[in-house]
Image (cartoon, rainbow, N blue to C red; front, side):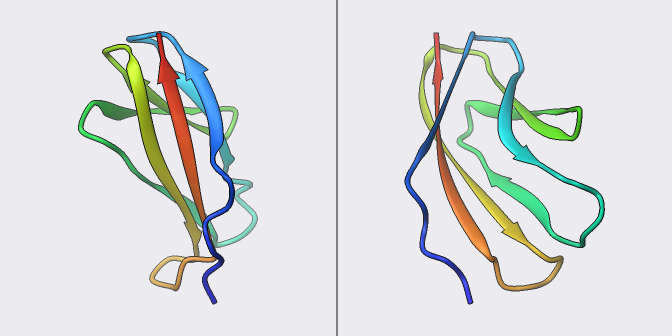
Amino acid sequence: MTQEPRREVEVQGRAGEPVTLPLGDDGETAYAWTLELPDEVEVAGTEEGRLRVRAHRAGSYVLVATLAEPDATPMTVLPIRLTVV
């Protein structure tokens, strides 16, 4: 059963620099995070198992992170507000 979206999480960063999200993969389960990103935001890899994104322009963006097993119903949906200066 999918959980309702939780309260929005807020993260901040600087234009053009990677921002580490409060999401990670422990590598011990089949569960993984996927991201729905606005066009202005791109994936910037990982750091110590945590997902990173980058926006090249200042602004406020909403990302949607979903935790699920591969090919399964999402377990958690988490909106993330990224504020870039």
